[in-house]
Image 1 (cartoon, rainbow, N blue to C red):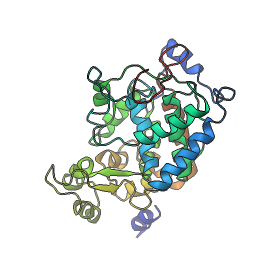
Image 2: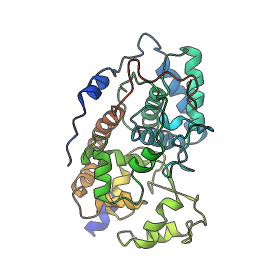
Image 3: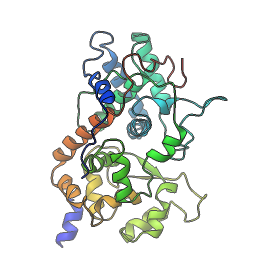
Image 4: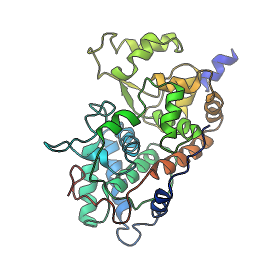
Length: 322
């Protein structure tokens, strides 16, 4: 009875970065555009509100864009670059192909910001502000975004394939991939709470709902009904990452994990008899603790090897180099 009631209600240290990176990080500041483009915040927020009003899933998509960008070469908008005949970007890498979305929203925001402050605000900073606004609009915590990033003139197809944690990851692999970005296991569990919003494709949760044993049987059957066992059939069928409220940013994601209702294998790994179980439980007990740790993780992630000063450029079009 107590277990049922609980379901219904629900260490790795930050790595020190090289001195050069630290000095680059120090150049990011929350007031970076206070004189050069003070209207950027209202412009981005207004565009994100409109985008989410059109499609509530878009908030999760923009947040995911930021995550997938920062884990490859740092938060430098490299993910936004389109492939050309002579340039291979990151969009067709396995974690991104047919999966990352929302590029047209960033394009629209960039266009609006350019009208207000031509050549001032980077695509990397627009994405970081838009990710924060997505969380806030959907009911999550607010924070001051550190800004001053510039846009890369390069991308890394191999980095996208190797650095972004796949949905098949075990706890050890998740921890290692986050540690490689200077993020602790605590940061990893908190940032995984981004899966309290958004949808996932059948191809990413098929193996979990058919093959794993650490999953609620009725939940698995429900997800199987819209995700055929055979690969290639229904691959793009969608299911909510958070069973109850996929368009509200709160702590239901963690409540689902203790009931063995994590949609992805990597989700359920966070509560599977391992070192992160207690942290998951703590976020069920205190949504404010989750929010505080999520904000800390987002700020740390935004600090990953930014281009500042004279490095990189301010792209006129987020999809291509100037």
